Image 1 (cartoon, rainbow, N blue to C red):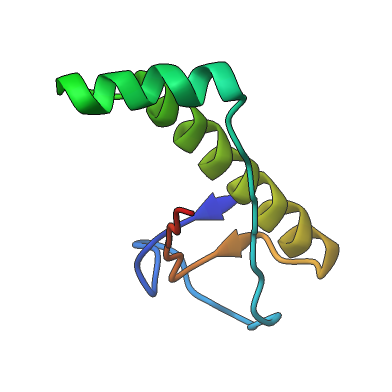
Image 2 (image 1 turned 180 degrees about the vertical axis):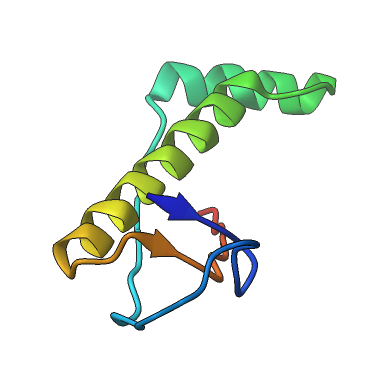
Length: 87
């Protein structure tokens, strides 16, 4: 599956639009990781617990988006955008 954040892929032509696909993922961190991240946040520095969870969540969303695109017969996804929310 070709995936691009641009509206086209160099050397390829879009022959048919199949529709819009989304990939949503909501993940949480376990309490011990959240506590550890809170300490890192107070003391300064990178919060690796949250970074790892963000990487995993993004991968989950991309996988979900690909599955939905394949379900409608698409072989590429163009114009991909990512958005993050924290609670």
